[in-house]
Length: 382
Ligand code: PMP
Image (cartoon, rainbow, N blue to C red; front, side, top):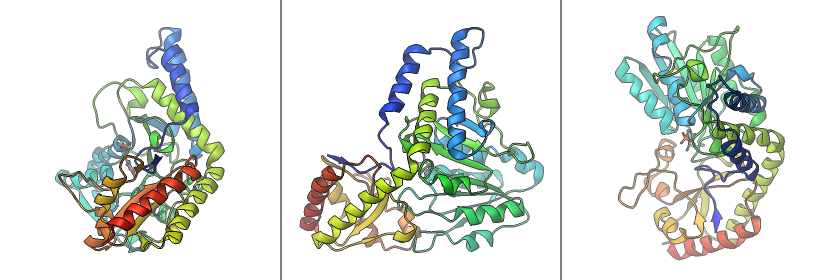
């Protein structure tokens, strides 16, 4: 079958797996247990991975902190500012209604701690209007937290413009780059930000590890504190034993991304062209959610007229990994809050699926399996 759910998790790269197996087999130490060579070796592996991440992002190794994934990184970036907010009296946070729950729910939870929040809606294109974000900035604005690429629509957000403005205003800027890290490499390098999150498994690394980048300003890190009590690992930002093999895998996936991202963009673009070609030749009634011109090359949010996404997913379940990008089980169907925020009708949302792929997606397999999917969709259409 064909796997078209890379935005949920991308298959691990063989070279990443090899790196991790070598660590599990041959480097058994704790990177913070330094009374022997075992610990020193583990520390060497972790610091090498930190350099690989830093190189991909164009930051210094001292600005990279390993976490369990983007969810944790987002939580630290937001909740970790509480003490500073109390100190500085800045208690206003701006975010958008299309963020991943790891940002949206964290920001909402800050209300109970006395924060004021502004949640900005996107345009129908799926993009946020930078002016709408910037017009909400106040004297007491502590933080703006936005994603770079939306996980459901693939729409790229105008973070560069927003970043420059916020830098001028001295407002902290956090970017959830989970869907863009390793893909829109130059764009991230050119954007001013204070904090950035991602998970390794979206760029063909292992699940369960991620990064929080904290950019220094005049040699000082952003004023975040750990949100868990524990040891001093990751310079106090993230206590807990460093999972050396996962971190090594994360580093390796970043190293691979750095050398392949330009090529990967061409490959994912070719897959997209193929999908659009198959849709066109099929004669089925389709359209895309979000403006294609702003869409990253590995994602499409596709509306098939009259075709229930649930029925389509169930009928193609055994050979085609697609999703409707929402918390959807057979018991409990919730229409996508992202598409809802873009102003799409409930009927349209019900007929929409997300497909996402990678540079290694097999075009020949795609042709046979996606054609099968289209045939099923035609039968389901009413
Ligand atoms: N942010 C975005 C934009 C995501 O797509 C995801 C994963 N779906 C996350 C955060 C959370 O990542 P993880 O589940 O690996 O913590």
